[in-house]
Image (cartoon, rainbow, N blue to C red):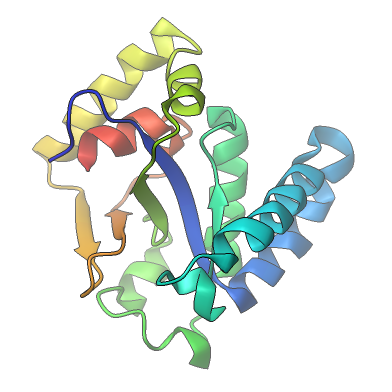
Length: 185
């Protein structure tokens, strides 16, 4: 479990081909919401920082991590649903994604790449979590609903470097918020 005083950054992780498809899909939101520019900038920034660290999947160029913690719940919903669409068709590059079945992918009602990673930068997540008390109340209720009905699965990489939280039969903007995922970690 997580320490009470620890806060997590929330990432969506995806193989490079899925990331490229995601950027194409987000271009249509660019003019209206600025999501393409924001997402593209964050990928570039993470390319320059995270990719230089050793040990993680990004260092090997296999997986990109996009920080969702500073996005609003509605923007997270757009990005995550676009990423799900971008990664809906299994490719040869995705065969190593053990634990994620194509039947689940066909239902398109799960998130296969929401990473909950411990971080020493609590400010950003705290800001995101405090955006509205009403949202927080929904978050607690949603997390309890999902947990009680066992609608999620947590997969761990063998080296324990990160976890993937897979949500089943759930597509909801509140689900995409850091609070729900933090409570399911």
